[in-house]
Length: 205
Image (tube, rainbow, N blue to C red; front, side, top):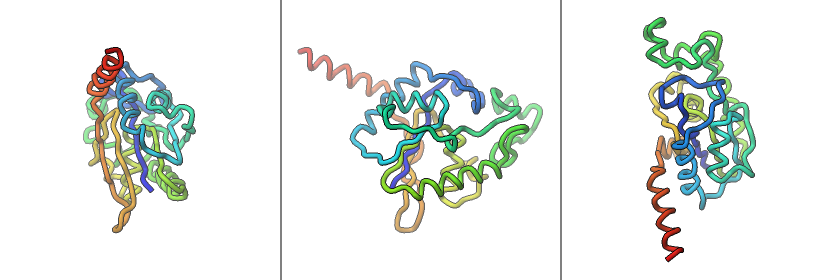
């Protein structure tokens, strides 16, 4: 079994570094290209279970990647609740809370690290009950938390993983136990777009 993690396409807030948890904003045109490029990568793969965060940016990424007719919403895949820090950048947060780190400190009026850990542990239990390959569409901090708990690491280890928008990662179980088979692979959307144009021109000629 492999668990594929697709972080949603670019948004205006991801571009500016603003923490986006409960705010439901759309992906940008570039984010749409990212989603379609991911769809090309996944087109020949078989997935037995497809889940998405209910937020628009994740659902739209799933739709543009070609899984709109199969994806099922899952609240477990929602992004971390940033509480009072929603919409702020890290630079803005540390002006009033120097040294703040999400996976150690959590967010006032939002999720604590223990709450993140418990949510991801429940999700890991659900995933391990599946048979076959799993495809998840979701968010950056949520997936970082999921990855470290899948590996059995402390939730604080999530601080050491980078995860960009429009990226593909894979968790799996190998001979020695749970592992990260692929992390933060970005699919170049422009290359896919040019390739599609070349194919269409070839059909015309």
